[in-house]
Length: 364
Image 1: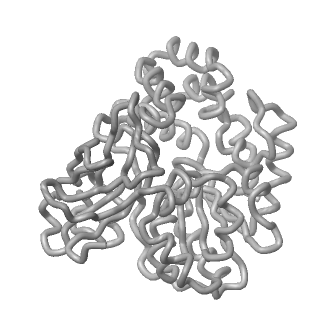
Image 2 (image 1 turned 180 degrees about the horizontal axis):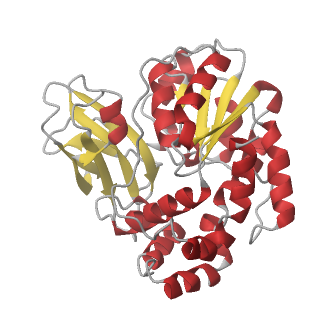
Image 3 (image 1 turned 180 degrees about the vertical axis):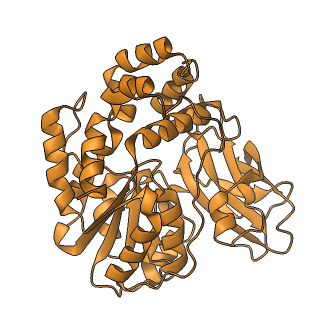
């Protein structure tokens, strides 16, 4: 590790590397980076992409220090050999992504050191947060990272192989990821963890998630899903062509979802509470999801986010100071008029199950 730079790697595969990096004494000047293998330049990147999480945590003054390398699809990186990240034009090695120092598909620079020196967690139980998209989970993850002892909170574990999940509870007090309940049950010992999650008013969650899918496909500064998950990328491209303000177009979109697309937009919040994923959510799935909600120690709602933060802190004996502002909020215009009864009726098949479980939590 070079003392002049701070660097972290978030995501890694043969054709894609992302993370953040900045010069400790010149944080406002973006670092130019190069990726080498076998002394051959494989990709270049500028560490200037906006990272809202780093700005909120006070780790970087502007948050503009993210980067991503995209290599040629035909000739990917070979992690059995050193893969080196250097400042442009310098021999200084900031990171070596060779396979021996990686955790599956998501590499964390300090992971090896952490496993060697981090004692078993001090808290008697591990909090596992089921991060449902577009429900303020990003805000809560950032807040948790800021109050838990350094090195004892980890988020986005969906980037790691599932075989790694069970061992995480030995080292971390807080674990979060976009994991549905079935995956959590398969991966963690229920006797040693407490489950938490947040739900959001379903129509608002659906619109926010659709906007995220569209923006993800259109964002040329972040090509992660284009390179690594073509299903999400292609769905975002398709959604970008839907005229949501036109009721006929909206009706056609709702009625013509295939099973793969439905997995991402059909009653998504209910799906997170299921043991197994159906092609389309049915009434019996609603009963299962509502029954499974009893497995959670606390379920909050986005509209009462501060209350969830306060209760979580009390249950885990954690003192939260000033709450961080909500993060990951889309600035783009609304896709459709949710005050319209006709629009809500058209969208109802995509939220009817979510409405049932949301109401059971918000209005017990």
